[in-house]
Image 1 (tube, rainbow, N blue to C red):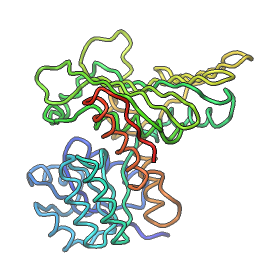
Image 2: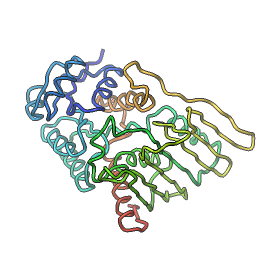
Image 3: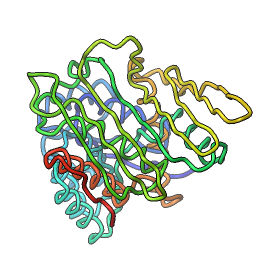
Image 4: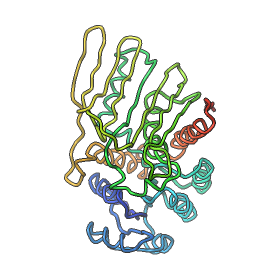
Length: 343
């Protein structure tokens, strides 16, 4: 039987409980300690989830506990200091998205871990959703031929700010929060972009960043990909939160991922329809079911990489390509122009 990996947790906010539950579901990982700036939050979560040690100082936690890896689940401004701390101590690190507050910061984090020989992964779970993986399989089957256009949408009236009020304080919001997911899925499906164009907007008057954005990518190979996102808390007749409707056009047909986890593949033979719902876990919030389920598969992939058994899909090196798209989108929106993003 393989040895359990001992995991230290940094962060005790909204997503931490689900990330910890995800590790316990895959088995092979034992959370041993948790750090949070507000130690009372860490104490509360540790007591609820049975984590034995609590710290208000991350360096002390890593020194005393000597974990097999660190899982960073803090707000984004806490990511870089914790990743650099893990790199200095030779401790593999998993980090939530978005990786960093700036592209330079992200590049510095990746370089620090690379130079130290420390494995560094980004917990980019969106691509691990059951319906999103099913659409990928349909694309790879070649049923619709060469794809030439796609639309990925995360447009919802769901009151996300209720569970995560810090979102209102972000200077850069929906592209870093949701755009990092959608842009990663676009890369997962179609490869690397040559250029992009972005427009943003703000519907809420009590937030600092943008809550609406549209990004158009031109992907090598001739695919135009549009990523629409909005957290406007407006009223929608068909609100699929937190699902991601997707429509892909190909030379010989189309694929649609529709609300209700309906995957529809249309060719000259007609339309084949099947449901591709996620599994349900008892610890998952029903309002976030498809997202929380994806944490398990993402964690399973990262655990295999941490054990050296298989490569991770979402290494920090790979996610840096997504971060370049995220920050290029802001450059495009601010400059009102298309931006080249090719290497």
